[in-house]
Length: 534
Ligand code: AHR
Image (cartoon, rainbow, N blue to C red; front, side):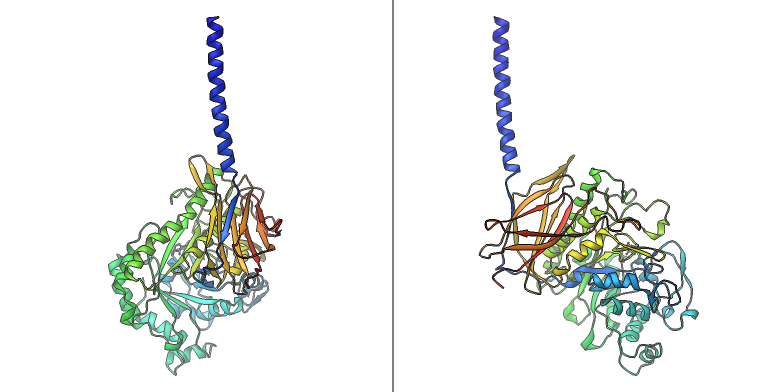
């Protein structure tokens, strides 16, 4: 009896506990499955998303230029004046707005005079930054401007502050932009370009804290003021001048530069640059693999990518203090994933494979850049072809488009669109181990054609998410768009299977006045809609 009572008592206690647990579970499940909703405010237009946020970077590094884009006019690979037709065509389709050249670290060892005139007599150098390979100087100023003309992009030239003189920089600018009868302008004409080249952006130095000269910010600032004083260009066609800035968690460059270079002194100073790379482990010594990774590095990579939001906020806070009118832009001219080098490739060539994870990294960054569009006016992913998080991979005459290419393609309607504020309600956390990130990332804007554009990212590689989209006061009957997804976390496009990761059309019709979108696991979707307020 005693035993029975005890048993009964324990049974009741256990039952009670289970009931409590079950109701808690029900509550948790109910709240976790509450409808995720996105509410867009179409009446409060924000900043314009400068098209140059979708900029690219092409450095003399590995097969980034030689082989990947430039094959020379005598190549059997179809080309126009040396530039591959297949690659140029793909970049044209991507609406690349601006290309940064010639580096990177390479820029601070680049001497422009070695890259003009007869190609057969140009000095041959060693690319000491990237694999100590031969640099033929076949691609120089005229070839670069021909490339961007073919693509339909603008030029972002990075000047050499680290190992070049103020005079060399001033003369390069004169050579490119002067319409006078000066000897340098005449030399440009003799070399085949009668009209001045148009430069949209010009950077003075690159990573001055590192490969660009290992300087203190104070020393760099003095040099910037000096070099910028002599950087003369036609008044009506002046590029935006960029001071090489900081990186990662270091905000001191943003602070010091904006406090000590004053645009009102008539000094060319339109932006500071910033570099941030996404490493799966966060450690440079052991970055993490591009493929064959497990879910812990899926989530850590996305989480590390999203850190750019905090980094921008921290830097912008310093800039707001010194430049409250927001004259100076915060241009992130190097960003993207950087993995352990692909086994069997030259470590100096920074070649890595590109998966659906890279497409999500790109999309998460875009959504964050849009949110800071009032300060972030240009970014350049590293890099355009065959290097780091590239758009395109080539192998001799073959070419393939990466998942990152398709992320850029989906976001084209955001170029020069106007940000619309949005709220995400009941956004669950996607968790793996001790790490968690929001499951949904989103951004909305009014595109130049008047349509409403919405981008959505589902960071969860296992689960689809359903969400309701609404625009109060506006009726939308359908969303037309595309979704990019894959069936495994490291899905890649290969030369044999180039279409494994590709956007597919995805349209959503309103049902009983509701727009319900189901995002597949690990996906990026971009939709447009015509609303009645147009
Ligand atoms: O993008 C590769 C290199 O990374 C660039 O040359 C340099 O600026 C950065 O360290």
